[in-house]
Length: 499
Image (cartoon, rainbow, N blue to C red; front, top):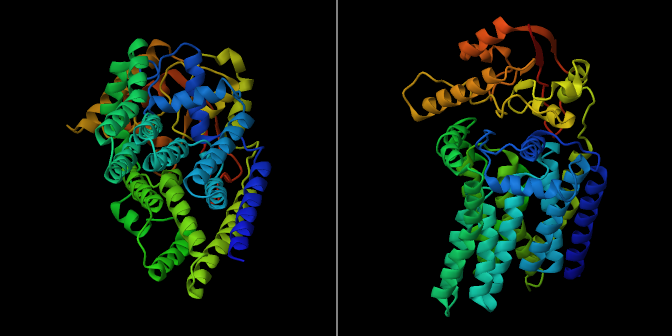
């Protein structure tokens, strides 16, 4: 009977995940994914990231993006298939870490937790990082059994790849290598040396690639300045993380898990220890990014979920009835409540042809469509202007994709204000060197209430728009945004034509 509980739970969660995959095939390319695709589009046109394209994402992000585009294609379905492949890869890694049924239940549920976050989170960087870190954990566990040097090197290679996407991945590597070396009695020096070599290989290749393209200096400048400014924006108070260490969806399961630990009264196995270390590092990664975005939780969610399911499944073999009952309750709750709840949320997500990008695409088509190539500029952050340009395969007149950094305080004598001033100067130089025929201004104001008046915080740009452009139209999409479980008011945009 205990084994049947796990089998049925794994089957139900897998069924929910399969339904989610089928019903989400039509999801469009929106939000961060479309922005990263646009950067890849610019790279294919000969532009060099960090040198000609201002961005804060690390090179590993574009490597993944371009790999998908040049193998599966650049359509929204191709990206959806990639996202599903990430879910499968995470599940396979969990199966290798734990057991087939445990990994299947945890992996399917984690993929549904990811789906619940909405259309904008497909293929997110933290999801890719999580898959790589799960693979790294699987290799570290193999290193504890045999051939520690080889498998630790492979684990470190996966962690090194994750670091080229998000630097917080180094926390996982430090914690897990330390535990592995502590548990390993032989070849410690060789294991440590090969692990360090494996970790440094992906960043080294990345650095050589940037050096070859002449963008290494620009990347370092971006890392020191723009990324530091980016990390100061949209920050959530530290108190939030004390009150919300876990998503509310996982709290009942977490309480059951804590209760089970009290009944078991046993030490963690090496597998459970590595998973617990991964969970703690995931919490640290979530806190260090200080944005409290749903996908920033993915590493913590994945490691904790697998740890809890593994504990529940092993406790089914316990002799005490109370222990078995708690374990069975945890597994059944995961499969009958948590997984279907996430699935139901995904079924309510909708994309509208009259959203920001749909309406703007129609407007730009009437203004010349492909004739606007290299003759249009977005002044927007993530509202949808760049998404529209990607759908139309239109190149901007500059390589500056985000306006969030333009309208921050620039008068103070601080590193952040200095970065804002330099960013403005570079954007101004690029904009005036190739003044576009069309400007699109959104009212997205980087965490503030919607307002077109954001341009007034940079008078020079406001004066340029007033003197050289006329307002063609202002549009507010008629429907609320249903990309996630929380409905959002749509952003508006203005289209300006050069006089």
